[in-house]
Length: 251
Image (tube, helix red, strand yellow):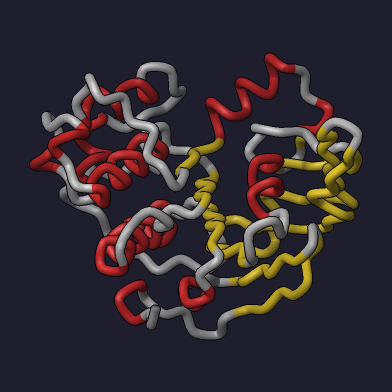
């Protein structure tokens, strides 16, 4: 679905639980550090659905970033199966995994990873030049509220604006899923709310299946579902009957 920044309908989309976007089966991940083995994931079974907004909640070391990286094709499980729609991504070779990441997944990290020598528009264009069905960089920046900052360099932007450029870069290729790892972790509360509003808007208006990792329990109130993790396992799953908007969150 392609949307321009100046005529985006205010849609409120519910998840379609009849369509499974991700499914994991007994996923484990063990890292070997010298003679020591660190078990990051311990038999994770999980489903994420079409248009769903999920928060993965848990303390540092609970395994949530490892799980997100596996879903996004940045890492592979030690054992277990991961499916994206009808494809088993754990069976992909390197070339297929690269195509999967390029064509289907948008990533947003705590640190923005912008190229300092490129403008906001040029940073976004790095993705649109290789995507199958991209937005114009200006449209993506308009969606995140930066239509008037397209020619600014990262050093001329605030932290929140740089994170919004990173989100624009992630969504410009119109990915099926948006995976966000602590996207507000380096931001103050006010700026963090602005960034969450952008992520929420992408989910509502583009229907992008969205997973956000956080250790901030307050953010969970804006999700359709909250998946809590502890010691490499899913410890709890709850559904929010009513979602709060980012500005309603109490940090």
